[in-house]
Amino acid sequence: MGLVLGLYEFFAMHKDLAFQGSHFIKHFWHTLIITIVLVFAVMNIEFVLELIPQIQSIPILSNYWVLRVVIGLIALAKVHAAGIVVKTKGSGTIGETWAHALIITVLIILTPFIWPFVEPLIEAYVPTSP
Image (cartoon, rainbow, N blue to C red; front, side, top):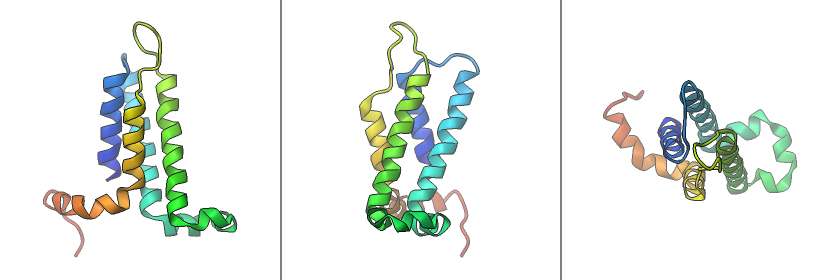
């Protein structure tokens, strides 16, 4: 699921931003790796809470939904930060749209609920363990 969302984010940003040369490949890997990590965190909230026990000491962050939204806000900030770093052709303004950033953020937050619908489609191509 992280791969799918990472590719979507990359192609959405590629549409919005003007890439030149090797910057294209660098941005592709940056987008893909960070999105996979964020999706992994959202789908494995229990693991994240065990891995970083200090989060549980903050009462509001021990709620799974709140933690998912915080991870989504991190994703939103990352998408816009990447858009700021990339210089665009022409006017030099940031080309990333809010629509793409919000779609990616909502998809990342809702990944645990989308996965059951996507999993049967992926199993046809990627074998899973029994």
